[in-house]
Image (cartoon, rainbow, N blue to C red):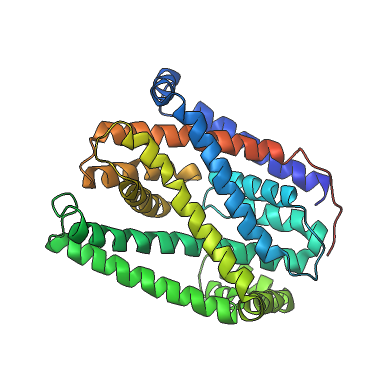
Amino acid sequence: MKKRWRNIFFLCGLAAVVIMLLTMKSDWHQVRGVLTQAGIWFPVIVLLWGAVYVLNACSFGLIIRDGHSGRVPFGRIFQLTVSGYALNYVTPLGLLGGEPYRILELGGYVGRRKAASSTILYAMMHVCSHFCLWMTGVIVYVLLHFLADAGKYPLGTGMVILLSLMGVVFATVLYLFSLGYRKGFVVKVFGLLCRVPLVRRWAVGFRDSHLEQLASVDEQIAALHAERRTPFWGSLLLEYMARVLSSLEYWLLIGLLVPGFTFFDGLLVLAFSSLFSNMVFFSPMQLGGREGGMAIAASGLQVPGAYGVYVSLVTRVRELVWTVVGILLMKLHHDTGNTD
């Protein structure tokens, strides 16, 4: 990537972090209070997310390394993973910052087309792992109702309808993902965008001028699924493991304060709070959505609302720490040049 573009990404990310710090609804006394309450567990959680990002980077690396493209050092993949997520956190609508950055930087190693297909496929893996997690949440809740405590995990008429609807939706989406993996989906997505009024003109122009490149990306996505099945399933498994590992954050923060709060409860809180927060993906760092989702998920498991606020604020500060790390890492590497 040219130095100019790298500086633009860096400055945009830095500016977004500064703006969020200045507009935080919580005052610094409240932040200091919850961090004091978390104690040693806050740095533990920060390190835990370092392990989560390592799994993410391993997943990304399996997709990139096909034996034909240039070798990308794992440290570089880890940096692109963390910095890409940092840009996504601070960018409205998510993926508008991190994915273009990864493509431009990775292109210096493997070429622009390979970088685009690898980045898009990894983004699909990341999103697919979320749906796998949400489906796991539905299954775990039902199992806990029958095997653990029906009173703690009630299955009234409303809950049965809600879980059934969620299960059908998640299963349908996972099936659509499987079709996209087998046949590619980029050209089809642009075909749909060509029918959307607000972006139709841009989408038609981009599709017509880049149709060959878009088809090439689809071919590489389908090839990974058909010809490199072990890396494909390994990448998806690592992403799913990263989601499950991150649920330890909620178990550590809530389980220390609420007797009887189990690891599976932490998994359920993660699943349903992330589902709610991803419904407001247009907000930078999902402001408001995460807190609302946390409150709903915690109250559903009979956790006092004050603990939900406490945990959401701690996780928000943890996200901010890793966002700053990701932005700073953008400046701490050597330029690899540009390859088209």
